Amino acid sequence: MAQNYPKRIEMQEGIDLLLSHAERMETEKVEINEAYGRILACRVRAKENIPPFDRSPYDGYAIRSADVAGAGHDSPVTLRIIEEVPAGHAPEKVIGPMEAVKILTGAPIPQGADAVEKYEDTSFTEKEVCFFSPIASGSNIVKAGEDVKKGEIVMEEGEYLSPASVGLLAGLGYGEVEVFKRPRVRIISTGDELLQVSEELKPGKIRNSSAYMLQGFLRQWGVDADIYGIVKDDEESIKEALKDCLAEADCVITTGGASVGDYDLALSSMEGIGAEVLFWQVRMKPGMATLAAVKDGRLLLGLSGNPSAAAAALFLLGLPAFRKMCGKREYKVPCIPVCLPDGFPKKSPGGRIVPGILEFDQGRVCLNTRKNQANGMVSPWGGCNLIGMIPKGSGALLPGSIIEALYLGEN
Image 1 (cartoon, rainbow, N blue to C red):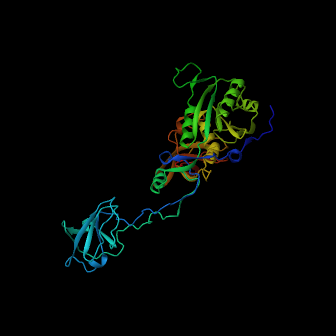
Image 2: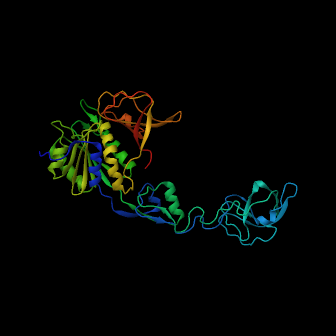
Image 3: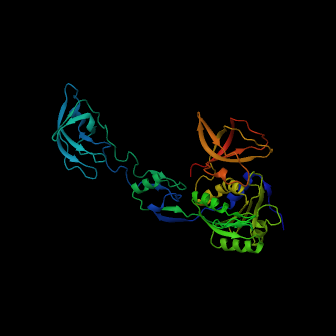
């Protein structure tokens, strides 16, 4: 086996190599009700004003401010009510001197009015309304275009379409929107020790949990991820599975077979189908036994069979590449300083990756970690929205130590 590829590289080098071979997906148009969670593939300008007309933000009375300029508690001003305008209806009358229009929230401002007074600040009957203080011109009126002006840029290419973003597009009259296609990823689980999740446990066997965890993370990121299934520790079988998946996927992930044991066959299988190996093994813990290759422009990512190591490599090495493939403008995951309230019992001089949950304690941003952080554990990743990065060269960290952490709480 030729070994003219980078080996035991630094994590940033691995990220850069994957990014250099990851390509943005093509675009497609989707109906607005299917746009949530997608990545916008074009700049969007407002086709019209929001709101499209001057409107009232309250239930109240539309008036001419000059008519109540002298109003006071001892000298109230009474105006005649000439019309009622509910939301969804246009005023029919023009307000004249000493006249008012009863107006409901969201209704257009009648012609001639320049202010609105809330119901609770007046005294009224069916035909008249009394005012007890002056009202400034423009009070309680939301102007046309005050929220969004016609022609202004409201979204840029590469933005994540949140529920509010989709609502804004709908409000502007966009029935469909151009987005990046979702990358198609297929997950192959290798190992004679693996069982399907519904199978009864047997001596020496474990259930195939990692594939479902990885699939969930990928789908959370906007990736179309499916599980191919379990493949036995046999090079020809793994090669056939790789070929099957590459025929329909933009990226293939394998779990297991990425280390240095006699039965770790991911590397030889990828080389066996003619893939170019980008790197093998990364200086990170957990996750060192990570492999990456490319075949006909499609990425192959070989992850450890240990769930925690597989998750760490997927997040730290794979996530930037998947963000690029999905069409995001920013590939880098945000990094923030966090406090370790309980410290961390680190023994080796190398760097350490610690998943956990964001918490606030007496004004501090804290990383709450589970006690057991061993490579084979799934539980530390439950609810994880922070990944602490303990630098190499440091020893055990005392309670209150500050480290950098990748923040996973935003899309």
